[in-house]
Amino acid sequence: MLPSMNKRELTLRQAAISDTQLVAEMHARSWAATYRGTLPERYLNDEMPAERLAYWQEKMPKLADGSGAVFIAELAGKPGGLLCVIGPDHNHGVLVDNLHAMPEYKGSGAGTAMLETAAQWAIERGAFHLHLLVLEQNLAAIGFYESRGWRRVGKQDAKLGNIDVAALIYVRTLEGRDQIL
Image (cartoon, rainbow, N blue to C red; front, top):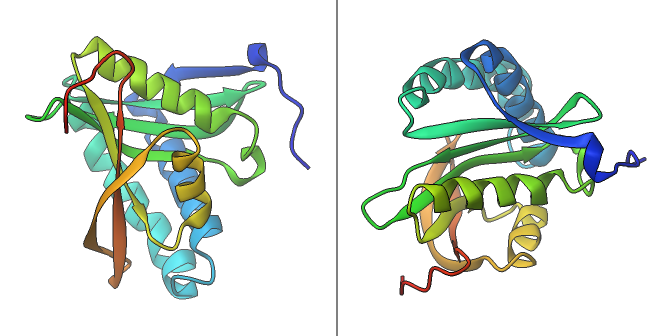
């Protein structure tokens, strides 16, 4: 059952290096829920949690230089999601590198709030658009992004857990930023 939330119960805060373990756990939990049945159980249960921890242990210090940021969505004081943004790049775009609402908080508004935070962060840095990759089989995420004005602009091969996957490239022009992509 979806928790009943109001706007005052939903907050986003910038993550600190001390949040690395929490960020890695949320990332692993989101992937396990999303890709169960798509990726091998061994990868999801045994390899992926340690892989995500190593990933975030390397990434969090690198983002401390201001080239990106990680935000934690908290709902009634409990972690409900995470957002990582990086950029802007040479095309004036900010990469939404990770956006994960915890399974029990999907539909709570956390994902939308995180996208709004990504847009604000990007605008403050002079970006014109946001872009991201979403796995082709993640239909729920694709529907979420498309319902919020994102458009598919391409496809690329990727690997997840040593499995070849297809990643779709989505872009959203930031409000008031009408640069042609």
